Length: 296
Image 1: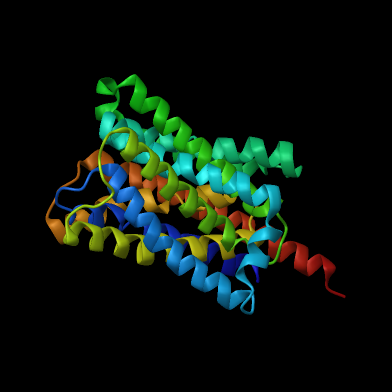
Image 2: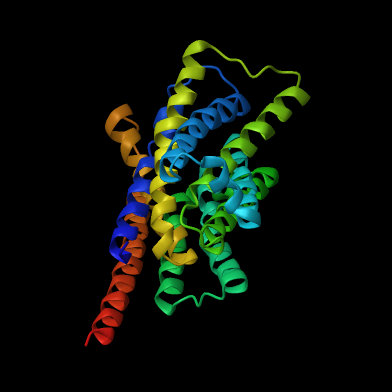
């Protein structure tokens, strides 16, 4: 796979994930942990089927091959999934979304420590530009957030950054089992939390069906594209490119639900898009230059 193809896959994953909020709006009464439980089940089935196909009918052998990197990446997704849900429930959307932008910094630091990846100067510049764009989008809500929700958002960003690095650390042909492990771990955590709270995992038929659909289509298919694209993209760039999700999410609710967004949201979204484009273009230029230099 070429670098440009990897960029296209990761951008497509972010665009698909941006539909997550729109789907969750269709759920009527299920709790966040019930949603996480059924969404994880939907994702597990699709990811297992894809792993079965790519492994030639030997999915469990492929799962064992991901080793320690796969297990850590899977647990990272538990923090990413559960932390984001808790943050959105206990603090403002503005605070949560802004703090999610810590993920590229986590990925950059972990990629340097674990993988020895050098973070290129333009990637640092793009990360800084993306954070500024996110600040423009959410600054109106920054002052009223809750501490617990802020911590949860940072944990979510840390989990997603760790997952991004583990995709490359494993260095196996198919890291999709890591995504499936993340779904299994998230399902287990959701079941444990519901049990401790004295609740059941069952919700209305509509809510469970919607959560399953969101997990199977939006979450799992996005994971497939993100994981495939990760094979040719350094960890810091990988996380940054997937942030296109934040740019598109308010567009979908405006177009389909009639919800309006502030001018600052669209200006900040434009800055964020510029950061994503800058990073992708500079990375593609370097790959092209290296290819030219190696050609006879």
